[in-house]
Each structure stands twice: as structure tokens, then as C-alpha cells.
Image 1 (tube, helix red, strand yellow):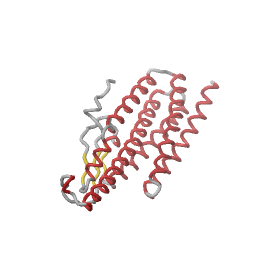
Image 2 (tube, rainbow, N blue to C red):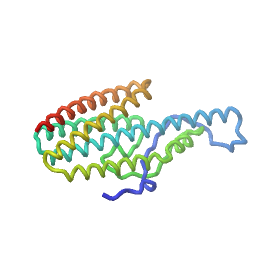
Image 3 (cartoon, rainbow, N blue to C red):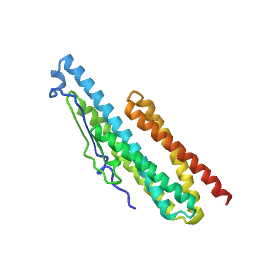
Image 4 (cartoon, one colour):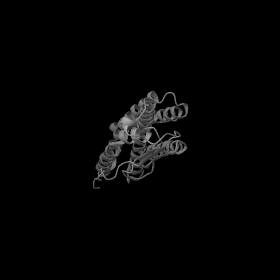
Length: 228
């Protein structure tokens, strides 16, 4: 699979805020109140962009686990590994669905929430008093960063696909155990950052419990495979 030019195809992320503001004047023509409103607006835009980036990171994580699980459903030799792969896929499809529903409620559009690697660099935010400026500044380079992560993930999946039989099963379980551990770290990061957002916090906490359980199961199966 060839790599994508992520400078030309970055994450599409649009967030609509409820702020209404004024048309920006040149900096030297602003009153102190206008400058303060601009500063506050930029902070709102930056926070919105940060949330979009975080949700995008979670979406990429879910997509990676879904792709790995689908591969194992087709290619795993051990019935237990196949069964686990199905559970893993269903868990992350559910997590992705919940994340997508939450994003839609917040009027966020994030292409990584689809089961596709096709993205765009058309980034925009709406709102006055510096919201759009703060949003766009914070989003610079984020699409390319996530795009590279997707490329690296696809390369790893291709390498795993080349393995067969018990070798595949062991490599798959090892990969999943490590991924779920990294996923827990991402979720903990979100729970700390968004602890005051009850709805989003509940979503992250539920996902973390599922991920932790899958990490444990992957490690247990991996131990069993090593004994064979």
C-alpha cells in the first residue's frame, strides 16, 4: 500500500460553536475590550481544535483494532483467537459508533470516524472574536500527523498479513496486547483532560474498561499459544 501525501490530504475537521462575534478589525484599531474578546475567542477555538485532534486520535485507534480483528477473523488458525478477534472487532465498532454519535451531537465532522483513510486538508472553524483563527492555528499539521500514523498502521497490518498459522496467531495477540495498553494510555489522557465533561467522560470510561479487558484476554491467549 503506497503512502498518502498527507500534506494534501489531512483530517477534515469542522466544529461549529455558538459564539457570535464581530468582524475582526486590524489589531491597531481594536479597543481593549475587543482585544480581550479576540483573546478569549482564540482560546475557545484552540480548545475546540484540541478536542477534535483527540477524538481523531481515538478514532484512528479504533479503526486500527477493527482492521486487525477483521484480518484475524479471516486468517487466525486457532478457534479461540478467531473468537477473540470477533469480540475485539465488535467492541471497537461499538466504541467507534458511540464516538461518532457523540461527535455528531457536538456538530464535529471528523473523517477518521469513518472506516476510511481518505481525508482532506480543508480545515475550518466558525465563530467570531478569534474563534476561527485559534482553531485553524491549532489544527496546523494535525492532519499530516494522523495521516502518518495511518500509514504506519497499514504497514504493520501488511506485515502481519504475511504470517501464517500459529506464527500469525502469536504475532496478532502480541500486537493487540500492546495496542490495547497504548489505547488505555490515550483514554486516561482524555479522562484527565475532560473530567468536567460528564457525557464524554462516561464514554471514555466505558471504552477504557473494554480495552483493559481485551488487553488481559489477549495476554492470556498469548501465554496459551506459547505453550503449544
